[in-house]
Image (cartoon, rainbow, N blue to C red; front, side):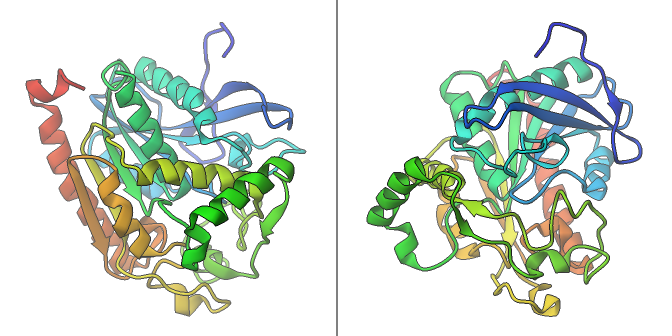
Amino acid sequence: MTSREPTWEPDVLPEFWQQTIDAGPDPDGEGHLVATLVRRGPGGGAGHAVLALHGYTDYFFHTELADHFAARGFAFYALDLPKCGRSRHDGQTPHFTTDLTRYDTILRQALTLIATDTDNASVCLYGHSAGGLILTLFTDRLRRGGELASHRVGGLILNSPFFDLHGPAILRTAPTSAALIALARLRKLSVIRKPTEGGYGTTLHRDYDGEFDYNLEWKPLGGFPITLGWINAIRRGQARLHRGLDVGVPNLILRSDRSVTETSDPAAMQRGDAVLDVRQIARWSGCVGNHSTVAPVTDAKHDVFLSVSGARQAAYRELDRWLDYYLSRQTRPSTTSSG
């Protein structure tokens, strides 16, 4: 970041504000990188804050989620990572990175900005899908580096985290992983999965069969292409998770109770996760750390807070139950002093 005083500017969402985080030259050779920190409302002092991180083919647009956290007394912030949403420049491959750890510096900068903006509020991290994997690994690294207390991180919420690949078991074997690493070094931008026609996105956007409005250039219906370099970065992160982590803070893992096949029929995808295998999320949830709460939500979609009304309200009830526990725990001197 530059030495000048950071400033907040009006965001594309009404009553939200944004600030650019300079992330420097791209190690993958696609120009200069920035991230965008988004804030709900005018800011100011708050005892608790949440920092939300999107998944793949995603960016922050979910004002209902922000309003819910605000109603619970949280200052709400969200981060669009480099090459994602607000942060992508011309000539950059959407969401592309070859190393998830490169996001650590950006996340630390975001936490520093939030601390300044809120007068050192305790922060609960929130991640959806790939963002859930990124934040789980990041929080574990904070713990191992003794940085949880200095960055005021007190909790972690995961919404359908990307803990393993969806598909045949052979995709997750050691020989397949070794071949992926070798290919990714030579052909990192090669596309291994092209955008689908329609698909999960048609269950979300209000112009199709969904309830929500968002920028279809930043979050296209059929998704962005998946490259060898990106999926290799994901697989390395998943392998680290599978060896067992300890994020060091209470964590909530929300997911659907079922997976459904992604099809061209929106109605067939309205009541289940059409992106990930929820059995894999269940399998690896025990690797996040101690003090984990796992909450399957009946009929929920991949993003549980974009589900049909009944499932969405059930997801918010699960969130509120956990937030009651989280907030009560944060007020205990023995907890806050240990980070």
